[in-house]
Image (cartoon, rainbow, N blue to C red; front, side, top):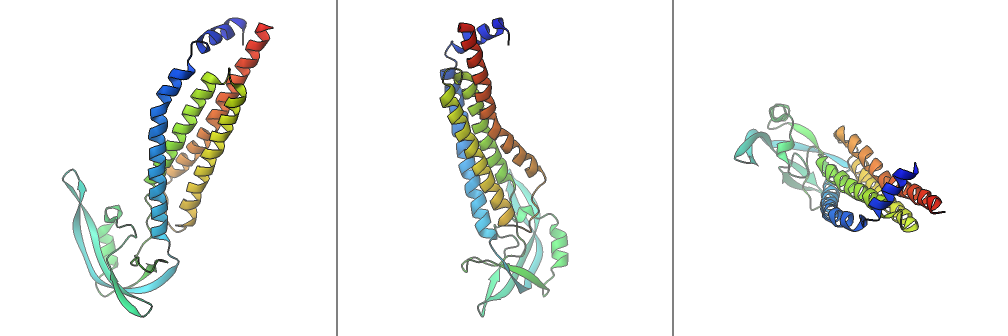
Length: 242
């Protein structure tokens, strides 16, 4: 960097940018944190619902097409399936095609009804929790991970802004904060990935989740990049003062 550019940067940084940037970042951090907490909560609940390792035989007792409301006065055609199965010697009934009760996520309702007519024998998943009814197919709502990724990106982006604006003055603290944010993002991102790949090994997660994972990884590096840039500016300014 040349002397004129460094002096300009010094004047801008000396204009107390850290405080207003922190104020602007605060609502984004709050929103990102709320989104992250809610998304992780949904992911954990879905993981618990899908926690089933035993396959049992079930008999279809009802199979027909129906309509469900999807909001905004719109309806969607779904397969309404009911079946009976045995748990510990007791006959039980379930109407869950998916474990989380999301019939609108069915890709081919008519094909499901044709494949599972009344009286047909099929395999069902028996949940580990005895209080949860059996279901036919595991289902994962991958959009919850978009919320996780958005929350982690908010942390990373705001962390970068704060380290760039304040790191030249508080280099040591900026580096410490940057590493703390990076470890936090990678930890939460890794935990979310573990949930996605371990609890529902047979589910078909959307391919765009790979982009979300890459985005979360990049966002973990943003604060470190900001701290590195700020330390360069601080070192160059010290050289000029000497």
